Length: 283
Image (cartoon, rainbow, N blue to C red; front, side):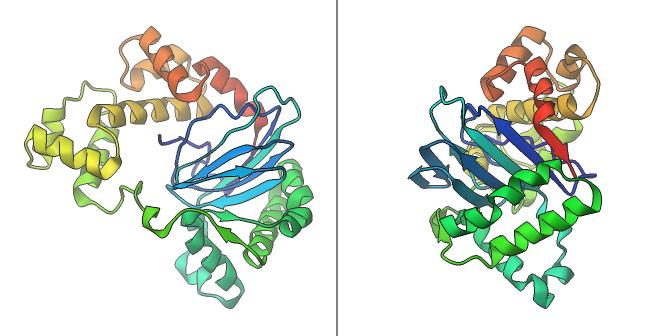
């Protein structure tokens, strides 16, 4: 499923420092890069089509739209997860062509398959990754860039997912899909029928259903529900609107159905989801 991240257009990156991590979030993907440090836990790590055991500490960089998840012992009260999410576009193409950024550019290209970093890199960066959530202003910017650079030049990196898996969840390479997504975003509050959308791209309902599922790995109704839940989650994180209002502007016409769907997606109620902002630091 696609996750809505708390990274806004005003953020360079966000840091989520979760103590007593529950590892109850399902396999998901998002268009942002993610650095994930897992401490005091062991279990399974899923990155694309790579499903491997991990032990503490575990440090991985995941590229845009690569599905991922960690499982662990939910009764382990010492488990900690530090997650840094960022939009790679703040490094524009011109900057990535500079000599100093060569290693970062190469790392970003490999990140689509997930990069596992060795113990010696974790020893060097663990304290700095944790401290990043406590930094502010220009110091946090410099600290973040320093971490990215040191990750990019580390040796003995392991690529996790297979080459054939890359890009399966990227819907940006289809003009028809882009047109459909733009339409859905503009009309999310309305009652959207599949025939309306199929007509938009000059296809029959049956042909459109097959085409859409092949491109997105989900049915049209599943995708629309995910989009509405993702929009609602961002409204919960970024606005002071009450939950009832968010329910209706996201295209749900029933509050109990909205709460049930939201909990099925995120494992918590909308109110509980809003309270999780205490773990979040914006930079």
